[in-house]
Length: 326
Image 1 (spheres, rainbow, N blue to C red):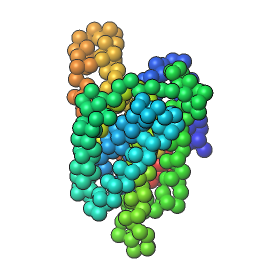
Image 2 (image 1 turned 120 degrees about the vertical axis):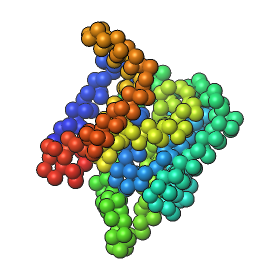
Image 3 (image 1 turned 180 degrees about the vertical axis):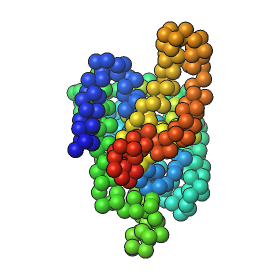
Image 4 (image 1 turned 45 degrees about the vertical axis):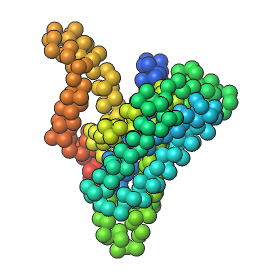
């Protein structure tokens, strides 16, 4: 019941957010929050650490952007094509990677994702180093004009809410319980008769498809797609979001994504605010050292919040909270 109240409050705040914040930035937050939730489905509930999720996120962005700009397809079909492309890449990558475990699994996903990166760099329709520019927003279902930032915000919010609801349903389904069993004790799951590889592959494809939905939506919002989204650093960034917020919790990746993206985009403004109110000039240099500041926050979280921020809150204030998800 407390969770439902929390989700209701969060939804109410999200609906009111365009009145107080910049819609483009808010939509970017939602896209990365969905990306982190998709990644968490794999690592937090299945126990598979992928270093290749940027391939799904950025690859879907390129496909959706090309469908909108060059092919002139409707928005909904372009997003579906992006999701389909991400799921297909996830199927191929997962089929190869799940043959191995541990660090070998992670390294295979990284290697395959780098192949996607070099394809994006060389293929003509991606724009190479210049990226895919000028992607139109179009109209949803032929009549809802997405050129209006506020209208698009509510569409993106609906996409995020739908993706998050799907992840919740997966986690709390019998399928999700099998994934948790695989994470906790894979040999025991095998002894119970479960086809572990099949379950892991399906979890990988679902995670890839949801990450692709986030990437395709981000391209629609910003109107461009670049190599940044398929670079290995993006895979590292989503890992950071998940760990900071709380791996294995539902709300943790959302909080982690908000923290990391706000710091990436607003650290300079935060530094100027601190200078104005404290008089300490050093704070003005925060905007020049975003990577170092985020890295420092990561170190602090690892030392003080080993379960992530949300995970620690659950563990401290809920009976048996370390075994629950928020």
